[in-house]
Image (tube, rainbow, N blue to C red; front, side, top):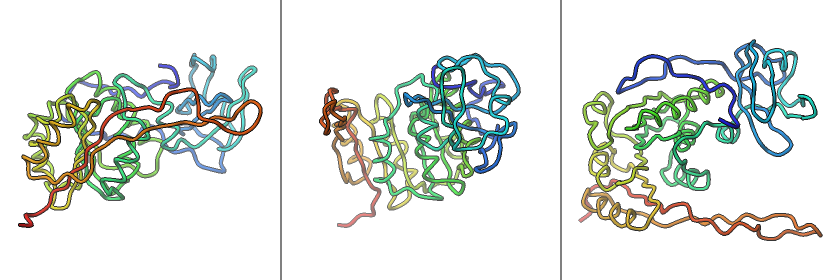
Length: 298
């Protein structure tokens, strides 16, 4: 996978509820030389980013070449520049932006434009507890994990093993790179039929995030897991999904607070000076819906 060095592999047999237990690697310390096991990001002049674990073995990396991370980064510190052949790379601490840019992908991910808005609209912060239906490649889960930190809990549900595997690899890399990471559980199951797996955890979650093809079937099953005042977010690529998700929220006793879309319009620098809108069209990615669990007010 381009942009990723040596994805961390999740060994062992498939299980329905998989808990990430082992920390593979550790955050690279600022102001100190790299050591075996540190996790770092390399960013090229073109903006492409690779995330890697410092280890003593030869790797052939598309876009960089053949390298041994330990030999390449010995005595190198965060913030310095290294050379590989004719190419130069900045050595960076892998934050959310770097992990996302260098992540493995199989399923389409929720973009940062929408993911950041979802985190804010759900009022998430350190210690929040979240259920996610539709892990995919973990694009949304990375934002959730970064927001809720080590005091939080994230339960991600994915019914396709091939997607769950890629999503777990990306989350394991983030866990190794960041000092703060939530209590994470990945459940390989249908989000509409996983009550037994969810019953293992305390109820009263702060938020639910749904990104599945038919969210109107999932909303009734997960809305009951929300605490009073807890919020639900639904990611709907087409308007028919939005309409049916809205109806499901109403039928489940949730109050819809906002529904709509965010439009992305990038600007560029003009060749003769100044700035102008880029050539890419203003982009629709999906419709978003937010609902809250309130007590009866009438």
